[in-house]
Image (cartoon, rainbow, N blue to C red):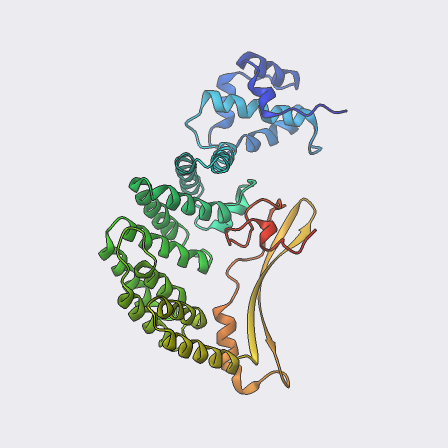
Length: 380
């Protein structure tokens, strides 16, 4: 049986023993030489790969010698240059945050992840990366930046309810992400904007939150969940009295906007508001109206789907939008409407390779749910 080395095996060895391990592979290096080799590198793996060829260890994936060389380099890097950004260290911090969440230590997780986010920013600055997709393509980690960055925002929100400074950190992180990754997934951009505004509301700086929604919805008045998110800040409150009239005003503005996206969701929120305020007749009337509108549009439906296609130890995430038609087939008289609906649901995640997803890992679709409860719910 092959004895595969682990991080803990390397951590038990002294600096001298780790160097002796490397010498045993034919790599005669000292601290000064290793520092020169690691200068400018962004991961221990990046340094180890050419050294494997240089000392003739071989390139067969998974061989114990290869693992030992990588682990020795990683451990020495950790001890000698802990201030340098390293992809493996970033991966460890992300996992440590998830471990803290499992222990229900929300503040600890948020603090660890803020440090990890600073590593992401440094890696982007060193490489010129300006998109999440490019980051995930360049750096292979168990957790993708696409998924983890959304979990980071959630962790800062949950911990920030007790510590306002973490809410301010959430604003900084979201604004940094919006600025640094301008071509991010449309839904991710919208959710980050909502996160910034709701954080200001939670901090009691409601004027800032109001101004942001005014600005965003002036630029895109068809953003249905923008109207809902804005109204929710007055409807679902934690430390402020509810303002039902303001919430209703915003929802009605959104509901009456021509071509607004997610109009049925706006109607659902209005129905909920009417019922909470004892206006059951208005609730029933609006629900019936929304049902009639949905029924009149039922001949054409547009659906966005995300699938993982097997590719060995990797998987391809494919995001597609499809239209289906009832009745006698393609309705030519509604072509403009259909094209507009497909455009609104257009895929914003380009097909990309990701590490094979574990059933308990966050789903690559970005929903925030575990893979087994989302896109992987139909798999064995």
